Image (cartoon, rainbow, N blue to C red; front, side):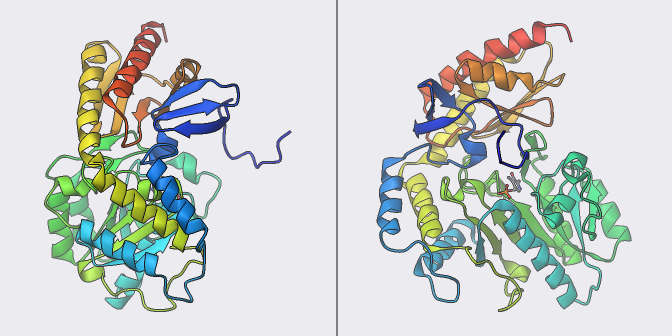
Length: 392
Ligand SMILES: *Cc1c(COP(=O)(O)O)cnc(C)c1O
């Protein structure tokens, strides 16, 4: 019996090493990795230049504490702000912590503006993390069940429904912010109407609300831009990042701009590990390598190639509801629960995931090649066709 707490239903495979988009298990079998550790390993596995930079930092400093100035943090904050046009950055270690910071910031912003019971609008099917505040913001009963009482101060609306936002605006004077994923990840790779964020930005300006984007899964080049909202003209007031930011080294960030800037003062928030030199060097090198190797362009090219290939092979098959996403964040929605596809793919040496019960999710590393994309199509499409041809 394992002494690990039973928090994951793990697949029966253990990996020993990786290179690029490939992983090897303890028996020597090779797998094409179309998940990259759930959008974490932006640069794939064992990227030589990334490893060299981490090694160099390891022999200098791993951690010192935020009691002191940390030049790597300053550099990372400068770079994140340059890429996003945001103004300030709080560094932490994970996605839920980045969202936790955003939620605290929104509440403090509300109190500073005379709102005693600040409320944040969140979305159905949203995923924001597993801490008490972020699971309360999450729109999935499975994540919340058993952990009541939930944190109060959230109102929920349907995703991609601007009228629902207007309804809340008309009736709830306690709203201080809206928290939304530009593409819902765990919720099933659900996308927004292309005008939604601009309309939401307008409402936020009108009511003095913070527009807070959870770009934890969509950010860091995955959709073909540094941040998914950059496919539109809008700027958020708060943006959260994690997953792909450190290419496997844990790091998260909460960025603020405009009227959110300057909300936190010394003593309002903190993190012991947050932004330590090793994590910051990992993030800085992730960003530099993405830029230098044109990996956002690659995400776009390979993502389009994948979507076209998947559409050509699956588009007309009964049971395939929709193929959607942006860049290397792709969902294939089927008309029935399909979790068993994960094991069938594993047996064929392919790592995929199923989210929201019936959506096959693909999140390959940004270094994915056309050959690898074709291999993915060639393994996955027959599995899906055969799965759908079986009686329910
Ligand atoms: C993964 C994820 C989180 C939570 O990140 P953790 O690092 O697991 O805490 C939050 N929001 C979104 C959109 C995510 O995809």
